[in-house]
Image 1 (cartoon, one colour):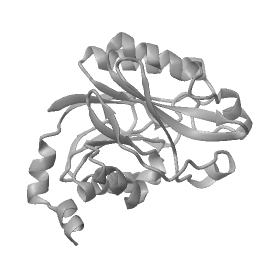
Image 2 (cartoon, helix red, strand yellow):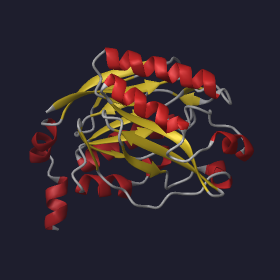
Image 3 (spheres, one colour):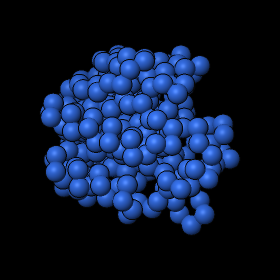
Image 4 (cartoon, helix red, strand yellow):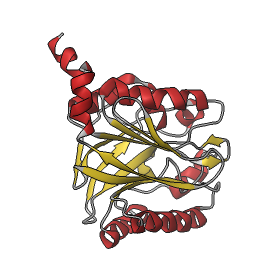
Length: 255
């Protein structure tokens, strides 16, 4: 089985949600027109990254709010699976969250970022360290958000549940670019799965959204300094072929 996946690498203009929504809708429609079946947006795409807690709070809503509802309608209209980060609010807590929406418009899952980086700890609450496979019409996927990818354990939990593709919405900085280039291929190779990293550009981000194969090879990569829609075929049959040559998971179970 093979699917076309798309990473929407966009410039999230700080505190300009309407502008960012319009940009995201346009780029998602563009990706769908090119045949993409799974389309992912980057972390905090609607708001930008360097806002105050009060500013994030204004944009936050629950998973049944208009932010997700509009993408449920879009997924149904385009017939695609969407991976859409948003700022989730539950009582007084804010979370960096990501919704996975089926092409029918059904909300399949909502994952909350479990490892918070730096100043995020002063603004957001961490999600539960519980990582679950999500069965979509285009394959079994998992979601990790940015800093989550720097820990081996979350990716391993997903791989052991049969996840074929890990989608990683991110705001990854320029100073941390070398780690972006190391961690994503490492997580793919560690677990012999595909990894799709979806980053922002400008505002201190390094871009370079990328698709990584189960053997750690970077199959496609976006530019560092421009908005870009990365679209590439994911051939899930490559996973068992790779695992015959690199039997990490088999030997782990037999250890």
